[in-house]
Image 1 (tube, rainbow, N blue to C red):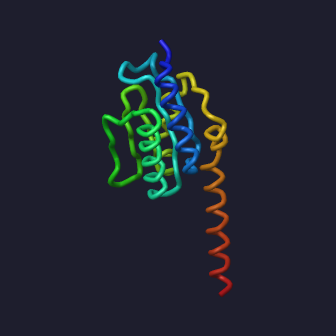
Image 2 (spheres, one colour):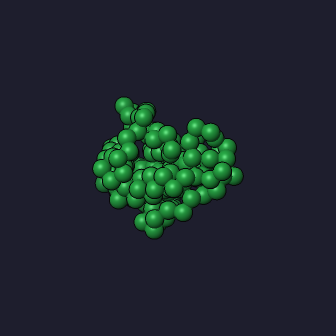
Image 3 (cartoon, rainbow, N blue to C red):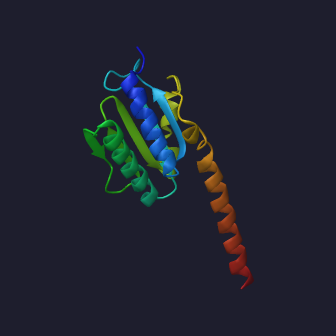
Amino acid sequence: MTATDRSIELINAAAQAAADKLAHDIVAYDVSDVLSITDAFLLASAPNDRQVKSIVDEIEERLNKDLGAKPVRREGDREARWVLLDYVDIVVHVQHSEERVFYALERLWKDCPELDLPEEAKATRGKAAEHARATAAQTSADERDGELS
């Protein structure tokens, strides 16, 4: 079994919406062979809770407006550390970068085929690591500046 055309359409729209809101490391897996409850998973992350919420809101709005799709379930909203949108055909996971590293969902689904995504979504690969390096460099510079004053 493989992901349906509808699943692919939803995944691509969700991935594009996430990329438009500057999500990091967007990836999608066809899980139809291992799960009977859904066809595909989309994973994305962001460095702070506010951005996680913004990405989730954009995905939900875009899928509703463009494809008439509404999630049957939305979980994790209050903390905005890991929000799950369940569209039955697909499940979207938007995680805070720390949760993404800790839970490492990619390890669970690494044997599933990766779905091709829009170019803007593919371009987000490695953004979390890039952001972490930039933040560490800034923190280290701030600490040095603090020692000098």
